[in-house]
Length: 369
Image (tube, rainbow, N blue to C red; front, side, top):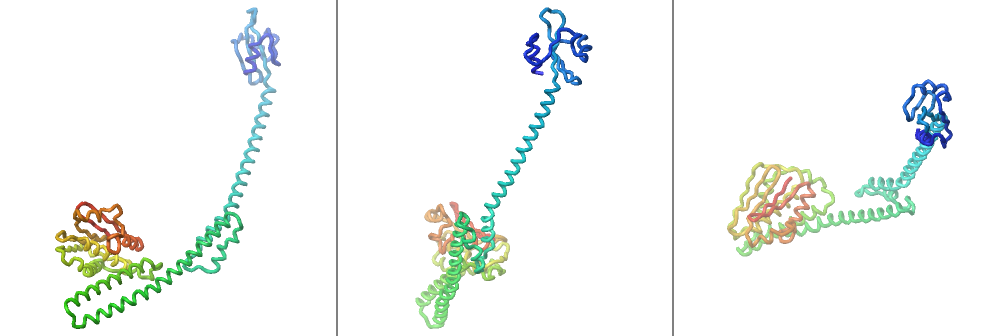
């Protein structure tokens, strides 16, 4: 239609391969009847005859002239172009799909050794590592490329971990015997001395030795509990909380000698806990010890509240103690008995939680289970 417009504008000398007609009788027979109706100037399309006709005025002003454009050949060429474009699109799409599939295949083949190495590492049990596991992880099985380098690094790391676990087992087994034996001997000696006729000064000295021995036993049990890789089935015991608290208070009460401080124990629920009783007692004893050591004369009471899911140990703080308790890192082990950081580790090891809240009036340690 655009070509026909250009031809009509150049009439009576059309520059394209079109035919111009000055009168109606010279038009093709299929257009004569239409032309006699005196059509409006402009472009007209006849789809049945596949003709486009432009009606233009003549220079003499007499009648109308007609420019006829046969579009049958052009439409046929356009149809052929469409099929050609469709063919090109199909070829390009097929090549794109083949390229994508080939890329995925190459990527999978490249990643396959890494995935195999990951599965092998995931299946290795460090506690029961065998010779077959060592052969499966050998770097020589993965070539000299980047995967082989990674396999070699993992192989060395696993060897170091296995050696460390073995050393840890040997140490805890030896320490459990070698450290407990002298404590047992000292405890037996203390019991024998208690049966002797001692002076008042000797009795006080013996009490200090007994307390130091008890503290040493607790410390050994705590560190062995933290260092031991397995629990040996001791973490499934069922025990009451209040007897643990009362025992810790009795053991640490000597720290309140000479202080006018009252200890208030409030058992609100009488809870029971499933877990490691020795680890729980160590944590409770450390919290009680810290509270007793930092309690000031005449500033009390120290409140120990036992709830269904938590134990709260709180004592008041004076201005001279604010600097110690109000540090930026309250879980630091400096100056807090065996260390609140160790209590934190015990709780993490046994699935409990520990928090320390400090304000202007008091310090409150909370142990939750």
